[in-house]
Each structure stands twice: as C-alpha cells, then as structure tokens.
Image (cartoon, rainbow, N blue to C red; front, side):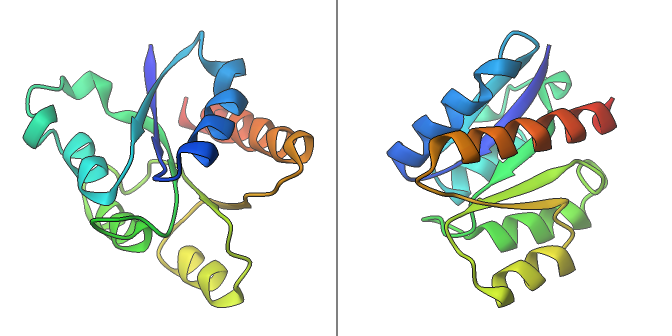
Length: 139
C-alpha cells in the first residue's frame, strides 16, 4: 500500500481533504503532517519518523503553501532538488488565487494547483480528478 502525504495546518481544511481522499484510502495510506517541519521529517525519515521504512515514501504529496515551521514553497524546492522526490507528484492545495503563488509553484515544479473552496462538491470532484490522474502517473 503506497502513501499519500497531506501537508495541511488548518484542521478544517485537513478534514475536508481527508474526506476527499476517502475514495483512495483503501489503496493508499494517508499520512497527515500539520507543519513544514513535520512534513520534512516524514519525507526524509528524520526526527519522529527516523525509523520510517523507505517503502513508505509518498507516491504523491498534497501540499499547502502557508504553513508554520516552514512554507510549502521551500518544501517543494527541497523535494525537487532531492534524488528521492524530484519526480514525485506534488499537488498544491491552497486558498490563494494569487497569480504570483501560481507562477512560483509551477516554477518550483508543482504538478498541479488546486484552490481550496467552500463548495465541497466542486473541491472533492477536482481533488478526485487530480488524484486519479497523478496516482496513475506515479504507477
């Protein structure tokens, strides 16, 4: 069973994303990181995740931009510079519709940009489409 890493500090947004991830939860383990440091510790098997087996490396990362203890863009840059994660699909999940944020995430190598919305059906529909596409690509 492969892993999907969800990096989200807002409890309500995390819950919404986890509900949206239910349709893949029978095939994938969902790991939640609530800040930048925890995300990096999980990705690179450090700190509390020092004993995480390498087969639990995420097949896909859902990444918020604005996080405590490190922002999503710096995490994305570090992933793209690493041998382990330079090709791992990264979907940005954010409330920002700022064109600069969109451009920076693409420049830094994000695979997709999904804006959080209060329209639950629209959000989960887009999330399902993105997950199905990128998980199929990941193999």
